[in-house]
Amino acid sequence: MRYLLGYDIGSSSVKGALLDAATGRCLAAAFSPEEEMPILAPRPGWAEQDPEAWWKEVITVTDKLRNIHPFGPGDIVGIGLSYQMHGLVCLDREGRVLRPAIIWCDSRAVARGEAAVNALGRDFCLDRYLNAPGNFTASKLSWVKENEPAVFEKIYKVMLPGDYIACRMSGEMTTTVSGLSEGIWWDFREQRIASDICGFYGYPEDLLCPVVPAFGEQVRLNAAAAQALGIAAGTPVTYRAGDQPNNAYTLGVLSPGEAAATAGTSGVVYGVNDRIQSDPASRVNTFVHVNHTPEQVRNGVLLCVNGTGILYNWLKKNLAMDGYERMNELAATVEPGAGGLLFLPFGNGAERILENRDLGASLVGLNFNIHTRAHMLRAAQEGIVYALRFGLEIMLEMGVEVTRVKAGAANMFLSPVFRNIFASTTGAVIELFRTDGAQGAARAAGVGAGYYAGYRESYIGMESAGVVEPDPTKRDRYETAYRRWKQELEKTLTTSAEA
Image (tube, rainbow, N blue to C red; front, side, top):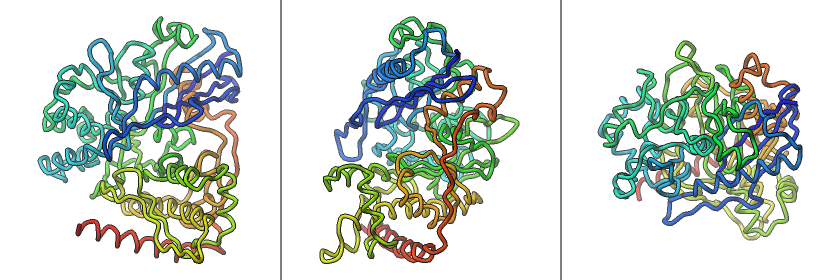
């Protein structure tokens, strides 16, 4: 039997999936660690992780998959990698990690991005990069250069988290065009490395890794990785993508007008278009999609809200709840509008949809005589959806209309309350599938390895988990509650700006 192996390198855990290449059936799925991986925060607004910890969890997950469904070292056709976006990993010439990775929700580099926009010009940045440099990886590297010169001097290559795992597997330092675009290192107009941003920040382009295609043979397992993983040396890594482009691929979102959604630690809606277009305020971001070619433009427009699943997890811990199922049951006992209680879920760093402001989370309208923890849970789920709708309105201004969304039956989308709020508030039909990013990476690896003839063939065996339609009986109540929520957000933004 021939297998496809996919990994999803997240900030909470590493997930793995083993698929039967012939049928597309998932034979084993695992994650590690059991508890969420720690995120180090040495200072407010900072977020770091040890890249070596990701690699150790990849090894653990591989062992778990083998225990669930044994496979031989030479049975893997191809390996696919999905990874948390926008992280910065710095390596020396020997491939040693020089400092903890600065991960996606770290906001220390906002000022560096603003300086780049002021120097290069907002119009220039949006025209060439389709994003302001903001708090992305290019700006994080600039922060290291300015604040940790001794570290910077030792850097041989910088890479994204998925690039690092591919390097640990092979000893080769590589990246993809999609990866360069997520770091704001890609010039969409010229279809080349963004030399102007490198020049402004004062570091050479050759700190960036050589480019390999998103699909196709990228690297092969070396002897050390083969021994650690129990997989034959020479097994190819044939696919790599950031978690949101990969999630879109996982759900079959490949063409203009299609959109994918996730609601894990962060909440994302990712729509595909065929235009080189940006948001004037860079509140939503555009990256090269995995199936882009120079002849056929495919870009992904990404709306991100940092504080989604992490908010619900925070409530679980601090309200001493037994589990998410019980939380959802309580939330379902409260009518739409949460009794007037409003939750602004912006408590996980600078939010791009708020132009990189860090407002912190807010619970507004709390009445000790009325509200219970059930109201808080309902308000949290509504607040997350309202934040996503706020972003969807920005996407609509760009001409990206989302009327149908595909999502994995996971994380917040496991909640019937959340699904109903999302569909009824946005007006979008939700298609749910029993899949995840690790499975998607495995399917994509089959394309990259040439096992499947094309993208569509890779979805063999993927199961539907149902369709959720907007509830017309609740639409007006959600619309009223959303308007109140949006007014509160605008008031908070004004107060923040004045301060």
